Length: 574
Image 1 (cartoon, helix red, strand yellow):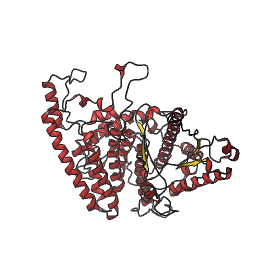
Image 2: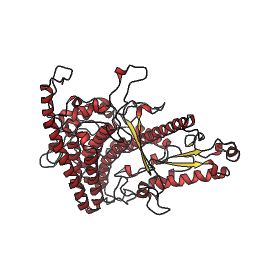
Image 3: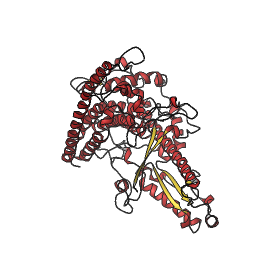
Image 4: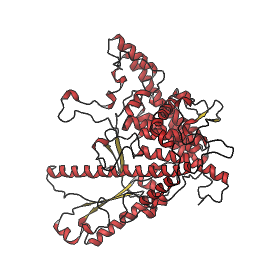
């Protein structure tokens, strides 16, 4: 069946790691080339042929992408534009050049307004939108006589020639075409990953410039600004801060669990807080040596020169704004008072952390994304930026869903340590298993028990999203975002919640169940089970009558919640 949209799931283990890529140089510290996957959504870029194209470009023939919410939600942007050219339609090399110019015009239409001038013929993959031109029938001798592909104005990796298509009934030619297609798509996936890396690095560099200039250093009152990890909420909802250096992560022991002001801690049973402690503890050993080093002008100059080498888009500083910001159309800050300028810079730091989290999630690294969303939530809350705080909470929920669906380095261990079955179902299933003589040991002489510090993944997702919606419902202009988030939660409840409730990680459409099967040359006993069979709760038998009755009641409740969310979305409007 033909479709204007296709979703591809590409395991990282099948991608070719770039030769110059280094673990100690990437901003994605939890990324691994042996686990997880990249998910790409392809759509027909002509506005009249697909809904996604129409949403981005509008209905006019010359309309361009100009979404006012693109800074808040970068997933609305388009990462690459691919053109398809049949060389039989080219009478001369001039037709090839016209096709290249047409593709560049389409790429400019899809590019961010501030980056359109960077999209040009001959521009490499260091621009905001990647371009690829797939050409077919270029090996025909007659065509080669009138069109010279060597005169292309694209770079070598941007013009991709496909082998000839032969009608051999699905034989060797079809297999060769499939192999070539896999190579081309994998190369594109790696290029998109490197592009996301570059954007994260540039975004982080802009934020570090703010730190190095002392924007969050000592204020007029003589108090040092807190680090993102040291911000907590007391029972009245006011902000309390530990007086620690802004450049040094505070220790996990100095953190306090969020209270009623956060609105998340109680419902998540401190899972949000415990995760943040683990993040701080892990990062303390990794970055403390670097964070204690004072900033220097030579370091700033090196960052600047590096940005200049990456191209114009890297050196251009752009504020992250939404239509609700009073300064959304301001060109510069000198007209503001020093106090207002400092407040905007504080706000910008939290927003940049949230943007890097968005890019990390799109790059296929949900653990990195969740860590950054957590810091962004603290920073935006402290800087009184409620919309971006709500978006960071939504990002935390999205990271949980991405962990369950797409996997990644360290993801299954994280899910195992934080989520389980509902407590009532868990207790009953364990009791039935023990009575039946099932082996429920953990390998260390302990029998499986209900862990009161864990929750279910759907509970965590719902709590975070509900907290975000409590912010989005406060302004009429946020009605589209509010209704959209309600629809997202309704879709999650209908499509994914049941599997996540049972800890069936990686099971379902467009999900990654791991590299299943035995490795080449190994025995059948060495077969790798899917992700959902590697969890501890997979050893429990959920087929008992009482357990099935509990799960059936949960399904009825799920249907009620789905209907309620749809009604709420209609009421929210937008």
